[in-house]
Amino acid sequence: MSSAVEAFDAIAPRLRRWPDVEAHDLVAADASDRLILSEAGDVAGDVVVIGDRHGALSLSLLTADPDVRIRVHQDAITGERALAANAAALGIGLERVTWHDLGPELAAGASTVLLQLPRSLDALDEIARVVAGAAADDVRLVAGGRVKHMTLGMNDVLGRHFSAVTASRAASKSRVLRAGAPIRGAGGEWPRAQEHPDLGLTVCAHGAAFAGASIDIGTRFLLEFLPEMREADAAIDLACGTGVLATALAKARPAIRIVATDQSAAAVASARATVEANGVEDRVAVVRDDGLAARPDASADLILLNPPFHSGAAVTDAIAPKLFADAARVLRPGGELWCVFNSHLGYRPILERIVGPTRQAGRNPKFTVTVSMRR
Image (tube, rainbow, N blue to C red; front, top):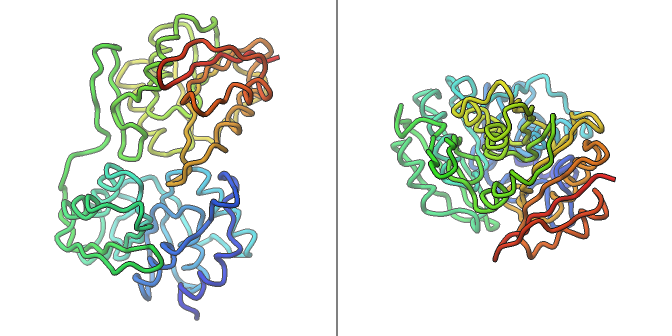
């Protein structure tokens, strides 16, 4: 039986990010995955793996130990699909893997938890609270990341939920934080809610949701154009985040039916809570999907989009064109895509090419709002 580190060294060069965005400077596994496995040492029985971006941690453990069983939580649906695709390509069976929401069932009774550190402290706080609340008294949490993305605040967050927190020495520009001796029930519960009286909205957010329970300024700008958007029976809030656009549109137009979709489990859970808090759950369906993969062709009259520009910790401009293509397929002829983006990104020519005739509906010092009509 090989060690998990040896297994990682063998399989890492063969891992792909697909269906996540792929580019020459975006990798499927890095030194932080290897360091987490090294610091964890020999593990046996049930292991919890959180934030396994494209399967490097889980597949290394499965390769190294024929008896290990793994409970996995991946926020991005593309991460789940990448893990499954990489397993198939490597000939690794997934009979010993189960996927779970970020809740008590994930960590119940666990003695070993491996974590790829999330970008945000709120996301780490929610994860730490779940693990500390449900894992075994002797749980070991081994959390790693690239040094450039780590902050001292991460130690403080873990310290709210575990009595013992230590850091490894840096290796290959990566570092591991170790935590143990859980403190049950520390910190506040998730999701968090915030009132926005100026917009008449309550926004709810789980830890990993972009912008939390606030409303980012790009979304606020797009909200100004709701009265100008075409009449529609069926609309979509694409990459919905906490569901602000879907909720505001539903409140403004009582007859409309909306699908709010996002690839992030935290975003979907947040959007559902936001929709319910604002009393529009009967007209807004929230789904987790890779873009609009599950939506039929020519099925929507109106799509709203504030496209993300991060894939994990990486900044990339490859996400938006993929979402534009999804919108073009799902819009009916004459349907409209309303999009807000940082003006320097210059998406208008891409929208013209992928979707159809595009005009600028508005611009402020930072953002541009466009409307594209499906040919």
